[in-house]
Image (tube, rainbow, N blue to C red; front, top):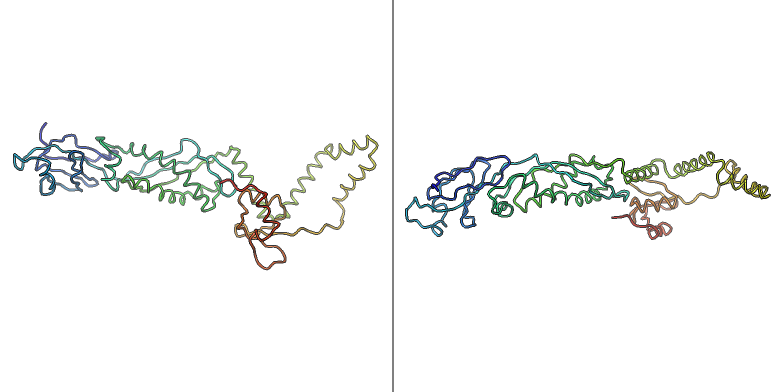
Length: 363
């Protein structure tokens, strides 16, 4: 094969590593390294020198180890065999990523697991050519952008589940609100994923979430929306209005079900000759709904500090539900009439015991 006098490579956008096809060189061969390129002189699998952009002449003065690996019987024209590798330093920005199947995320506010799909784009460039050549390329004669994308595709997706979950918990973001925080989420994930790229000599130039899709017809989404509506109702209207609303619901159902349990009991009582006693009891219950009898003493009303807002709640079952959803924790502050300052919920014995009666939120 002819001795090569000039070694150069015309940069291709999709090609990031390329080995010059001929290995027959000589003292005096020129290596032309274009802008956005980096070249390596390799002999026997060992990197002897590397070159930045410019024209470089192979000689013992700039590659001192040449005297040890080649014989020089022909003076400055001595031929020898070595490899010249070029690395493309251009930035590639249009790399797509996406989840092939839904990833399961737990909503940190309501403790409900939701399947979501995520899609986005990222850019990269080779920041440390030597590390990249030694760790990813191996003895392949070339290495394309497609190979880089394929290699990191699995690493990106496997990292996203834990990264998104951590960000949601750190900032207490509900999955229903996640698309509002795409920019913050993108920066958070970029910082973490960039560490993995750096191990292989790559720089992650950017990382974007274009969309995070939540299936609207999924039953878990319906449960999540119901939980959100319930908490919002309690916060905005207060517990008294919520209880009143529930009372109207019960009365409405009774009105629509005249032949229901109460009517059947009364009918059964009359049929057995017991209508007088049972009927009077039922009438008494009904009449009590419309009389102005003295109400029982009101229960002690607790005010819970939730999202920096005072929320009055009396219903023990509702408190248990909010504990199980993580809306109320052992660090929640509580106030009631008769005390001067807000206190931790665990300072009230009647509330502290609820934590041992309620399953903790699912992590």
